[in-house]
Length: 108
Image (cartoon, rainbow, N blue to C red; front, top):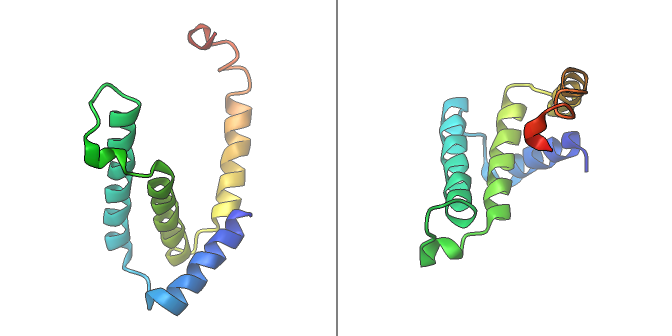
């Protein structure tokens, strides 16, 4: 599924279930909260912190989906075509980093 389709799916959900978008500042705060939940899982599951029993039940995929959902909301309400922006970013990264990572001895 393309990002445009995801943006449309989120917009349809907001219109039919969510009533309206939260304002941009509220969604930015929610996004920060969701990224924090992802960070907590990663730090405890893959990092050096110990994982509490309550953390073991957390689903990383679900938390990443929350981040994506709020990101799509922000894109919709600010008129951002995330598909176009993502495609442009991938072209830029490919051009800029075409040899950089291949020549990085830390990655060998």
